[in-house]
Length: 41
Ligand SMILES: [Zn+2]
Image: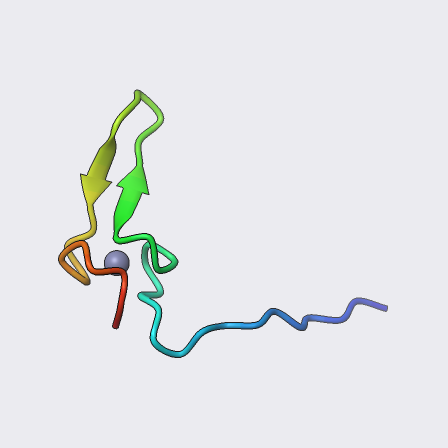
């Protein structure tokens, strides 16, 4: 039995998870275009 109970902050950007940027595999980071780097919705 699997229980999905992840606390999601309503004000966080769903794309970057509230960080405001994406972590690139090659190194470095890219600003989230969804929240413009604010990390908020
Ligand atoms: Zn974002």
